[in-house]
Amino acid sequence: MHAAPLSSPRLQRVLAVLSDGRPHTTRAIVRKGRVMAVNACVSELRHHGAVIACRQELVGGTRRFFYTMIKGPVS
Image 1 (cartoon, rainbow, N blue to C red):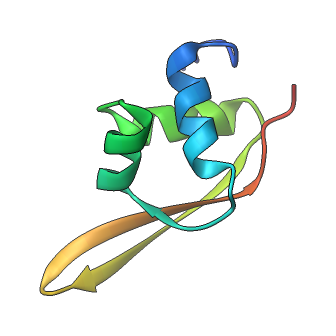
Image 2: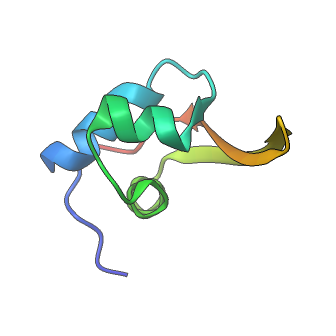
């Protein structure tokens, strides 16, 4: 995988959303981080050493994904 550098504005926006350590839905990350490919951004952050948990949950009959950053990336 060719991950963007950690200094990438796109990754920095997603990192800012996840940095509170709380679970965030894919939609919340799209809106707050102004990105579209959340799973790709999460994969790139993991490439840089971040530990991000992902869980899926049925909410009102719809599958939702929640991302929680356990540990930030290594600078």
